[in-house]
Image 1 (cartoon, helix red, strand yellow):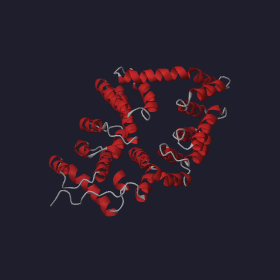
Image 2: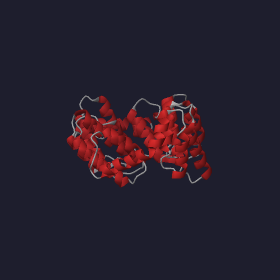
Image 3: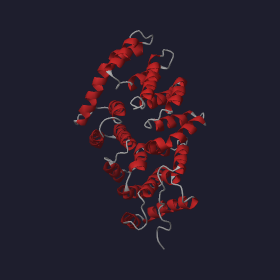
Image 4: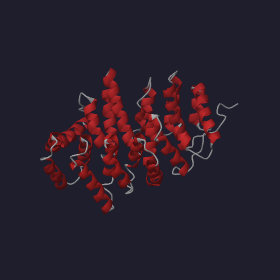
Length: 363
Protein backbone atom coordinates (compact mmCIF):
# COMPACT_ATOMS: atom_id res chain seq x y z
CA UNK A 1 0.00 0.00 0.00
CA UNK A 2 1.31 3.42 -0.89
CA UNK A 3 2.50 5.74 1.84
CA UNK A 4 0.45 8.40 0.03
CA UNK A 5 -3.16 7.12 0.10
CA UNK A 6 -4.50 10.44 -1.13
CA UNK A 7 -3.04 12.60 -3.88
CA UNK A 8 -2.00 16.11 -3.03
CA UNK A 9 -4.82 18.53 -3.80
CA UNK A 10 -4.78 20.33 -7.11
CA UNK A 11 -5.44 24.02 -6.51
CA UNK A 12 -8.19 25.84 -8.28
CA UNK A 13 -7.80 29.34 -9.65
CA UNK A 14 -5.93 31.39 -7.05
CA UNK A 15 -8.45 34.19 -7.03
CA UNK A 16 -11.52 31.98 -6.42
CA UNK A 17 -14.15 33.31 -4.07
CA UNK A 18 -13.78 30.20 -1.88
CA UNK A 19 -10.10 30.81 -1.30
CA UNK A 20 -10.57 34.52 -0.66
CA UNK A 21 -13.36 33.81 1.79
CA UNK A 22 -11.25 31.37 3.80
CA UNK A 23 -8.24 33.69 3.74
CA UNK A 24 -10.35 36.55 5.06
CA UNK A 25 -11.67 34.30 7.82
CA UNK A 26 -8.07 33.51 8.78
CA UNK A 27 -7.44 37.21 9.42
CA UNK A 28 -9.55 36.95 12.55
CA UNK A 29 -7.91 33.79 13.88
CA UNK A 30 -5.48 33.44 16.77
CA UNK A 31 -2.80 31.61 14.79
CA UNK A 32 -0.18 34.24 13.93
CA UNK A 33 1.37 32.27 11.06
CA UNK A 34 -1.98 31.65 9.41
CA UNK A 35 -2.98 35.28 9.84
CA UNK A 36 0.29 36.64 8.43
CA UNK A 37 0.19 34.15 5.56
CA UNK A 38 -3.38 35.19 4.80
CA UNK A 39 -2.43 38.89 4.77
CA UNK A 40 0.44 38.20 2.38
CA UNK A 41 -1.68 35.94 0.15
CA UNK A 42 -4.50 38.49 -0.03
CA UNK A 43 -1.97 41.17 -0.94
CA UNK A 44 -0.80 38.94 -3.80
CA UNK A 45 -4.37 38.36 -4.99
CA UNK A 46 -4.80 42.12 -4.91
CA UNK A 47 -7.85 43.91 -6.33
CA UNK A 48 -9.85 40.69 -6.66
CA UNK A 49 -9.91 40.33 -2.88
CA UNK A 50 -10.95 43.92 -2.10
CA UNK A 51 -14.72 43.33 -2.06
CA UNK A 52 -14.41 40.53 0.49
CA UNK A 53 -12.01 42.58 2.62
CA UNK A 54 -14.32 45.59 2.66
CA UNK A 55 -17.27 43.40 3.63
CA UNK A 56 -15.22 41.80 6.40
CA UNK A 57 -14.25 45.19 7.79
CA UNK A 58 -17.85 46.37 7.79
CA UNK A 59 -19.17 43.20 9.42
CA UNK A 60 -16.89 43.14 12.47
CA UNK A 61 -16.09 45.38 15.41
CA UNK A 62 -13.03 43.35 16.39
CA UNK A 63 -10.04 45.71 16.24
CA UNK A 64 -7.48 43.00 15.51
CA UNK A 65 -9.55 41.77 12.59
CA UNK A 66 -9.92 45.31 11.26
CA UNK A 67 -6.18 45.93 11.59
CA UNK A 68 -5.48 42.76 9.60
CA UNK A 69 -7.95 43.83 6.90
CA UNK A 70 -6.29 47.24 6.58
CA UNK A 71 -2.87 45.60 6.30
CA UNK A 72 -4.16 43.34 3.52
CA UNK A 73 -5.53 46.39 1.71
CA UNK A 74 -2.25 48.35 1.85
CA UNK A 75 -1.01 47.28 -1.56
CA UNK A 76 -4.39 47.04 -3.31
CA UNK A 77 -4.38 50.62 -4.61
CA UNK A 78 -8.17 50.60 -4.38
CA UNK A 79 -9.75 53.97 -3.58
CA UNK A 80 -12.51 52.23 -1.61
CA UNK A 81 -9.92 51.85 1.14
CA UNK A 82 -10.18 55.58 1.83
CA UNK A 83 -13.59 55.66 3.61
CA UNK A 84 -12.71 52.90 6.07
CA UNK A 85 -9.23 54.29 6.65
CA UNK A 86 -10.75 57.71 7.28
CA UNK A 87 -13.08 56.17 9.84
CA UNK A 88 -10.33 54.08 11.45
CA UNK A 89 -7.78 56.84 11.79
CA UNK A 90 -10.13 58.72 14.11
CA UNK A 91 -10.40 55.73 16.45
CA UNK A 92 -6.75 55.89 17.46
CA UNK A 93 -4.29 53.26 18.58
CA UNK A 94 -2.97 50.46 16.38
CA UNK A 95 -6.10 50.67 14.24
CA UNK A 96 -5.29 54.27 13.31
CA UNK A 97 -1.67 53.36 12.62
CA UNK A 98 -2.81 50.59 10.24
CA UNK A 99 -5.20 53.03 8.57
CA UNK A 100 -2.39 55.53 8.02
CA UNK A 101 -0.24 52.84 6.40
CA UNK A 102 -3.13 51.89 4.11
CA UNK A 103 -3.52 55.53 3.08
CA UNK A 104 0.20 55.78 2.34
CA UNK A 105 -0.24 53.08 -0.29
CA UNK A 106 -2.70 55.32 -2.14
CA UNK A 107 -0.56 58.46 -2.35
CA UNK A 108 1.10 57.10 -5.49
CA UNK A 109 -2.22 56.20 -7.11
CA UNK A 110 -2.45 57.09 -10.83
CA UNK A 111 -5.95 58.36 -10.03
CA UNK A 112 -5.24 61.96 -9.03
CA UNK A 113 -8.33 62.44 -6.88
CA UNK A 114 -7.50 59.28 -4.90
CA UNK A 115 -3.87 60.31 -4.37
CA UNK A 116 -4.92 63.81 -3.29
CA UNK A 117 -7.53 62.60 -0.81
CA UNK A 118 -5.14 60.07 0.75
CA UNK A 119 -2.46 62.73 1.09
CA UNK A 120 -4.91 65.21 2.62
CA UNK A 121 -6.03 62.67 5.22
CA UNK A 122 -2.45 61.92 6.26
CA UNK A 123 -1.56 65.59 6.47
CA UNK A 124 -4.69 66.19 8.54
CA UNK A 125 -3.65 63.38 10.88
CA UNK A 126 -0.19 64.92 11.31
CA UNK A 127 -1.57 68.37 12.13
CA UNK A 128 -4.46 67.23 14.33
CA UNK A 129 -3.36 68.28 17.81
CA UNK A 130 -6.17 66.27 19.39
CA UNK A 131 -4.94 62.98 17.86
CA UNK A 132 -2.69 60.51 19.67
CA UNK A 133 0.99 61.26 19.35
CA UNK A 134 1.79 57.80 17.94
CA UNK A 135 -0.72 58.33 15.14
CA UNK A 136 0.60 61.80 14.32
CA UNK A 137 4.21 60.64 14.29
CA UNK A 138 3.36 57.59 12.19
CA UNK A 139 1.55 59.73 9.63
CA UNK A 140 4.47 62.19 9.55
CA UNK A 141 6.98 59.40 8.96
CA UNK A 142 4.80 57.88 6.22
CA UNK A 143 4.97 61.19 4.37
CA UNK A 144 8.75 60.98 4.09
CA UNK A 145 8.65 60.35 0.35
CA UNK A 146 6.38 63.23 -0.67
CA UNK A 147 7.92 66.20 -2.54
CA UNK A 148 10.22 68.34 -0.42
CA UNK A 149 8.09 71.46 -0.80
CA UNK A 150 5.00 69.82 0.70
CA UNK A 151 6.99 68.20 3.48
CA UNK A 152 8.68 71.51 4.26
CA UNK A 153 5.27 73.14 4.71
CA UNK A 154 4.26 70.42 7.17
CA UNK A 155 7.48 70.88 9.13
CA UNK A 156 6.90 74.63 9.22
CA UNK A 157 3.40 74.15 10.62
CA UNK A 158 4.73 71.80 13.31
CA UNK A 159 7.22 74.37 14.59
CA UNK A 160 4.36 75.97 16.54
CA UNK A 161 2.75 72.70 17.56
CA UNK A 162 1.77 72.46 21.27
CA UNK A 163 3.35 68.99 21.49
CA UNK A 164 7.11 69.38 21.99
CA UNK A 165 7.69 65.87 20.70
CA UNK A 166 6.08 66.74 17.36
CA UNK A 167 8.20 69.88 17.19
CA UNK A 168 11.32 67.85 17.78
CA UNK A 169 10.32 65.28 15.18
CA UNK A 170 9.73 68.00 12.60
CA UNK A 171 13.06 69.70 13.29
CA UNK A 172 14.97 66.45 13.33
CA UNK A 173 13.29 64.71 10.40
CA UNK A 174 15.83 65.69 7.75
CA UNK A 175 18.70 64.45 9.87
CA UNK A 176 16.76 61.30 10.78
CA UNK A 177 16.09 60.45 7.16
CA UNK A 178 19.74 61.02 6.25
CA UNK A 179 20.87 58.87 9.17
CA UNK A 180 18.45 56.09 8.22
CA UNK A 181 19.67 56.16 4.63
CA UNK A 182 23.27 55.98 5.82
CA UNK A 183 22.49 53.12 8.21
CA UNK A 184 20.79 51.12 5.45
CA UNK A 185 23.68 51.69 3.02
CA UNK A 186 26.28 50.79 5.64
CA UNK A 187 24.43 47.55 6.34
CA UNK A 188 24.35 46.74 2.62
CA UNK A 189 28.11 47.28 2.62
CA UNK A 190 28.48 44.80 5.48
CA UNK A 191 28.81 47.36 8.28
CA UNK A 192 25.90 46.36 10.50
CA UNK A 193 25.08 48.14 13.78
CA UNK A 194 25.58 46.43 17.11
CA UNK A 195 21.83 46.36 17.77
CA UNK A 196 19.47 44.65 15.29
CA UNK A 197 16.61 46.73 16.71
CA UNK A 198 18.08 49.89 15.16
CA UNK A 199 18.30 48.30 11.74
CA UNK A 200 14.86 46.73 12.03
CA UNK A 201 13.25 50.15 12.36
CA UNK A 202 15.05 51.28 9.20
CA UNK A 203 14.26 48.05 7.36
CA UNK A 204 10.55 48.42 7.99
CA UNK A 205 10.50 51.63 5.98
CA UNK A 206 12.94 50.53 3.28
CA UNK A 207 12.22 46.87 2.48
CA UNK A 208 8.89 47.58 0.81
CA UNK A 209 10.23 50.17 -1.62
CA UNK A 210 13.92 49.53 -2.43
CA UNK A 211 14.98 47.05 -5.12
CA UNK A 212 14.42 43.41 -4.19
CA UNK A 213 18.12 42.72 -4.82
CA UNK A 214 18.93 45.16 -2.01
CA UNK A 215 16.61 43.30 0.36
CA UNK A 216 18.21 40.02 -0.69
CA UNK A 217 21.66 41.47 0.01
CA UNK A 218 20.44 42.68 3.41
CA UNK A 219 19.15 39.19 4.24
CA UNK A 220 22.58 37.75 3.47
CA UNK A 221 24.31 40.38 5.61
CA UNK A 222 21.94 39.85 8.54
CA UNK A 223 22.36 36.09 8.35
CA UNK A 224 26.12 36.46 8.52
CA UNK A 225 25.83 38.59 11.66
CA UNK A 226 23.26 36.22 13.12
CA UNK A 227 25.76 33.38 12.76
CA UNK A 228 28.24 35.13 15.03
CA UNK A 229 25.71 36.19 17.67
CA UNK A 230 24.48 34.20 20.67
CA UNK A 231 21.45 34.03 22.92
CA UNK A 232 18.88 36.81 22.80
CA UNK A 233 20.86 38.89 20.32
CA UNK A 234 20.96 35.98 17.86
CA UNK A 235 17.18 35.63 18.12
CA UNK A 236 16.80 39.37 17.41
CA UNK A 237 18.91 39.14 14.24
CA UNK A 238 16.88 36.13 13.16
CA UNK A 239 13.63 38.02 13.74
CA UNK A 240 14.95 40.85 11.56
CA UNK A 241 15.79 38.39 8.80
CA UNK A 242 12.29 36.94 9.01
CA UNK A 243 10.78 40.41 8.69
CA UNK A 244 12.84 40.99 5.53
CA UNK A 245 11.60 37.69 4.09
CA UNK A 246 8.03 38.70 4.82
CA UNK A 247 8.58 42.00 3.01
CA UNK A 248 9.80 40.09 -0.05
CA UNK A 249 6.80 37.77 0.12
CA UNK A 250 4.45 40.75 0.06
CA UNK A 251 6.23 41.83 -3.11
CA UNK A 252 5.84 38.32 -4.59
CA UNK A 253 9.60 37.98 -4.92
CA UNK A 254 11.35 34.61 -4.66
CA UNK A 255 14.90 35.98 -4.90
CA UNK A 256 15.74 34.78 -1.38
CA UNK A 257 13.86 31.47 -1.27
CA UNK A 258 17.24 29.77 -0.95
CA UNK A 259 17.67 31.41 2.46
CA UNK A 260 14.25 30.20 3.63
CA UNK A 261 15.19 26.69 2.52
CA UNK A 262 18.58 26.80 4.23
CA UNK A 263 17.01 28.23 7.39
CA UNK A 264 14.75 25.18 7.60
CA UNK A 265 17.71 22.88 7.04
CA UNK A 266 19.63 24.54 9.87
CA UNK A 267 16.71 24.92 12.29
CA UNK A 268 16.88 22.91 15.49
CA UNK A 269 13.77 24.55 16.90
CA UNK A 270 10.89 26.80 15.85
CA UNK A 271 11.67 29.72 13.55
CA UNK A 272 9.90 33.09 13.89
CA UNK A 273 6.42 33.07 12.39
CA UNK A 274 7.53 35.45 9.63
CA UNK A 275 9.58 32.66 8.01
CA UNK A 276 6.55 30.37 7.81
CA UNK A 277 4.30 33.16 6.58
CA UNK A 278 6.76 33.85 3.75
CA UNK A 279 6.96 30.15 2.89
CA UNK A 280 3.17 29.98 2.61
CA UNK A 281 3.25 32.60 -0.11
CA UNK A 282 6.49 32.12 -2.05
CA UNK A 283 7.92 28.75 -1.01
CA UNK A 284 8.51 26.36 -3.92
CA UNK A 285 8.97 22.63 -4.44
CA UNK A 286 12.59 22.77 -3.28
CA UNK A 287 11.33 23.74 0.18
CA UNK A 288 9.33 20.53 0.68
CA UNK A 289 12.24 18.31 1.74
CA UNK A 290 13.56 20.84 4.28
CA UNK A 291 10.02 21.22 5.63
CA UNK A 292 9.65 17.45 5.98
CA UNK A 293 13.07 17.19 7.63
CA UNK A 294 12.21 19.94 10.12
CA UNK A 295 8.88 18.21 10.80
CA UNK A 296 10.67 14.93 11.52
CA UNK A 297 13.05 16.72 13.94
CA UNK A 298 10.28 18.63 15.69
CA UNK A 299 9.50 15.86 18.18
CA UNK A 300 6.80 16.98 20.60
CA UNK A 301 6.73 20.61 19.39
CA UNK A 302 3.09 20.34 18.33
CA UNK A 303 2.60 23.98 17.37
CA UNK A 304 5.80 24.05 15.31
CA UNK A 305 4.81 20.78 13.61
CA UNK A 306 1.39 22.20 12.78
CA UNK A 307 2.99 25.30 11.23
CA UNK A 308 5.42 23.20 9.19
CA UNK A 309 2.64 20.94 7.96
CA UNK A 310 0.53 23.92 6.94
CA UNK A 311 3.38 25.40 4.91
CA UNK A 312 4.11 21.98 3.36
CA UNK A 313 0.50 21.58 2.23
CA UNK A 314 0.26 25.14 0.94
CA UNK A 315 3.33 24.70 -1.26
CA UNK A 316 2.37 21.19 -2.40
CA UNK A 317 -1.04 22.44 -3.49
CA UNK A 318 0.25 25.56 -5.22
CA UNK A 319 3.04 23.69 -7.04
CA UNK A 320 0.67 20.83 -8.02
CA UNK A 321 2.94 18.26 -6.41
CA UNK A 322 1.66 14.67 -6.71
CA UNK A 323 2.82 11.45 -5.06
CA UNK A 324 4.62 10.55 -8.28
CA UNK A 325 7.10 13.41 -7.98
CA UNK A 326 10.68 12.51 -7.14
CA UNK A 327 10.69 14.91 -4.19
CA UNK A 328 7.74 13.10 -2.62
CA UNK A 329 9.40 9.73 -3.08
CA UNK A 330 12.58 10.99 -1.45
CA UNK A 331 10.61 12.31 1.51
CA UNK A 332 8.86 8.96 1.92
CA UNK A 333 12.21 7.15 1.90
CA UNK A 334 14.04 9.46 4.31
CA UNK A 335 11.24 10.37 6.72
CA UNK A 336 8.46 7.79 6.31
CA UNK A 337 6.58 8.67 9.48
CA UNK A 338 6.67 12.38 8.71
CA UNK A 339 5.53 11.65 5.17
CA UNK A 340 2.55 9.65 6.44
CA UNK A 341 1.46 12.43 8.79
CA UNK A 342 1.95 15.23 6.28
CA UNK A 343 0.11 13.52 3.43
CA UNK A 344 -2.60 12.09 5.66
CA UNK A 345 -3.38 15.65 6.78
CA UNK A 346 -3.58 16.71 3.13
CA UNK A 347 -5.84 13.80 2.36
CA UNK A 348 -8.29 14.63 5.14
CA UNK A 349 -8.49 18.23 3.97
CA UNK A 350 -9.06 17.05 0.41
CA UNK A 351 -11.85 14.68 1.50
CA UNK A 352 -13.62 17.51 3.29
CA UNK A 353 -13.81 19.64 0.21
CA UNK A 354 -11.95 18.86 -2.97
CA UNK A 355 -12.91 22.14 -4.60
CA UNK A 356 -11.45 24.64 -2.14
CA UNK A 357 -7.83 25.57 -1.57
CA UNK A 358 -8.15 27.83 1.44
CA UNK A 359 -7.91 25.13 4.09
CA UNK A 360 -5.05 23.53 2.21
CA UNK A 361 -3.22 26.83 2.23
CA UNK A 362 -3.88 27.70 5.85
CA UNK A 363 -4.42 24.60 8.00
